[in-house]
Amino acid sequence: MKGIVASFGAGGLFAIGLGVSGMTQPSKVLGFLDLFGAWDPGLAFVMVGAISVYFLAHRLIKRRSRPLFDSHFHLPTRKDLDLRLVTGSAIFGVGWALGGYCPGPGLVASVSGVAPALAFVISMAVGMKLEHLFSWRLMRPSEERGAAEGTAPSKSAAQV
Amino acid sequence: MQDFSPLAALIGGALIGVAASIFLLAHGRVCGISGLFGGLLRRTTDVPWVRAAFIGGLLAGGVALRLLAPSAFDASWNPSWMLAIPAGLLVGFGTQLGNGCTSGHGVCGLGRLSVRSLVATSVFMVSGFATVFAVRHLLGGSQ
Image (tube, rainbow over all chains, first blue to last red; front, side, top):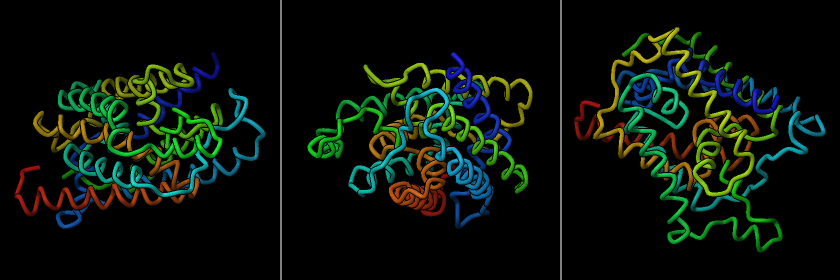
């Protein structure tokens, strides 16, 4: 139960951080992505703030033998670069730049009364489901290679 | 365009970093929104309640912002439905295929010095820059 509360709290704080930093405003995100217009460096400052904190905290937390509410850490270990990673990220970048929302800000804005944000989240869920159902036809998931090497194919590999 | 406030951006970013760190300390997992949310759309997934609680917290945070700081949503531009729907489809499909988004690859991955995440983040940034350039400066869109 404490673990669920921690997860809920982390989600709430994440949303507040997005709001404080201005990332719930698609115009700010597009201002950053518009290198050849009136460039707004805000998103870079958000990334620097977030990455600095996480870089330090991650090093401290990894010294523990286990997280608070799980028996072990579940951090990605893959180092190979594959077509799925590059193609998927390229497709994500196009969608991000069309709407000004990535998944976090889209979800946060979807409950704010901004109707297009809700439309974005619903179609994002459809896009995710389409990938789950059909992408293996287009590109062989590299988890299968992992399976061949003796590591279990993991649904949680989808988390980075 | 809104005023650029580097301090608010840094502080907000730091809060995002703290939130992702709490998630790591509590559950030992990457705090990637697309991965956590996408997992909930699968028939079977690990730690569904941890995922649901995080997404629930994110939505509750959105409601709190709406009530306490509504200016967080006063964007000078919001996408039209005609843009929001294809944008969502591409973001959903792309983040699942590429195993992550701005939070999982951008914040947690770069913070862990992951090479895969560095490549992913570089690719989606360049692809985002190119898309905005094409829409705003080549096609002359009002985006």
